[in-house]
Amino acid sequence: MENKKYRDCFFGNEKLYKEKMELLDKKIESYNACFMSNAKWRKLFLTIFDNLDIIEQCEIVVLNISNMDDKNIIWTNDVNLTNSKNKINNYILDDYIDTPLAGGHDPISYREIEYLEFRKHWTKVIHKKNQWSPEWVKKEQNLNKIKERISDAGKFQWEGTEEYIRIYGYK
Image (cartoon, rainbow, N blue to C red; front, side, top):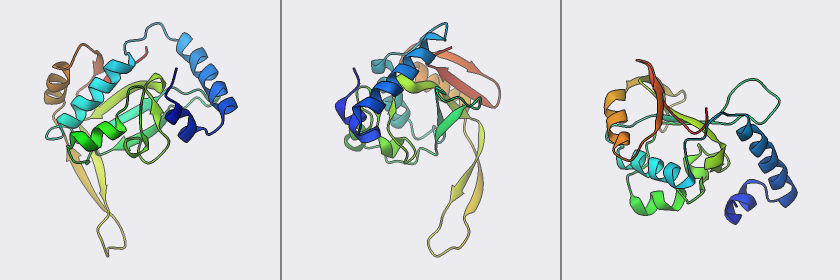
């Protein structure tokens, strides 16, 4: 059962919550394998935030439970939060990640996550005070180091190329 705070802040309505969970259960049943538990997701997110010295970009791809064919990517974050256990523990909860880590959108239940993706190259948008247009900076991170550090936290279902690595929740 999901946390009441998750239900309340995301839906505020028990009927909508139940409908969403039914759609989510149906979608999950269509996959051949589930690789992650809530505890494993939580440990993974805590590991990511413990390694901000090498992890600068991470994207959450959630299960698409709409009728659209496109992936529903709702979190692209340059992971620029401070590495403060007190702060992070307020957002990385037992069964979901809260709004500040979900890219300013709604919280994300761990059950909703299809995979996390770390890109080798991406463009970071920097908004400077008193500057009309943002600055676009090309960034790069070392995927081998990321995989090595994250692998210390447990066994994960990995997939990747030279340009990205993914950790799957479902496949």
